Length: 360
Image 1 (tube, rainbow, N blue to C red):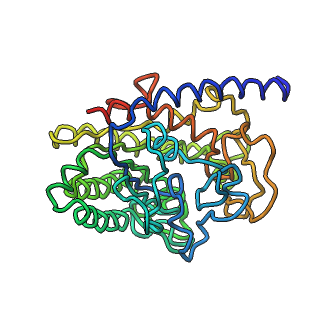
Image 2: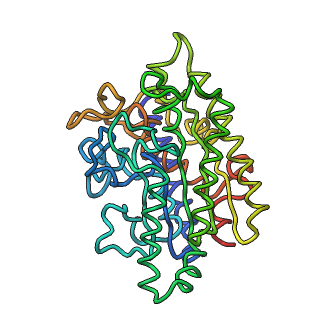
Image 3: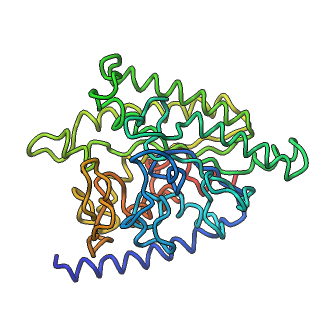
């Protein structure tokens, strides 16, 4: 297929996406607010003022975002941004680091690049806001919401209706377990035992969120970590398409996360948990979206896989699955968000997708 044909495929698919997006907005008003927890896949500026290499507040990041670089680790919008649009929010969910003057009743994004479930994860890159600290930040916001609404009971009733979007765990592998030069976890745990330990700690954080009024949880599984260009470059074998060991570890974690969703749905009768199967969605994204470049990013990268500052980016950005050597492009994020919101097949979302969750 020639270059022009590929572009026409993308144009046709863009029309489909616009239709799907406008159709999805029918869910407007289903949730009054959305709270986001996670890592660089969701971070929209919380790392900008931290002392860390894991920040994306410079060009060419944000080259396709209306206001330019914001701290999003992609060329345009993240999956969170698209989900918020599908839900009918007029404004994107603000980062916790910049909530001054923001309408926190709409929600807050606490995600932090390089963060993980474990305390030490990603710290070789510098500071980050781990999941436990993100929940501590949410606790402060909950108190502020109670003040705005008049009392704790009104705040709880309000927060019960909101969507809690949580996408975390990737760094516990690529910036912890599979970096033995910085972290000893791979010498202490088998992949099976490590997944058990992560899920156990994760479950404690989810219980804390439940105690703060969270009731509608969308938990995102890991992507196929071994197919990330940076991981393939550093840990792959000659001739292999992906790093099998890393993919296998991610799938073990995902299986246990899905089982946790089932267990919590039985334990918490007042709540609903869903699992989004990022591994399957991301593996099928090139076929669905027309993206054909999946083994390389679209910008000139530093040694750590991030875009080098102020360097030129490729022109055909919609043809790339990855933006840098680690993070998805905006077009990939749109497909991931669309199928998380409105799943065309049951294997993408369990036991339901986000559009059904928010209508409960």
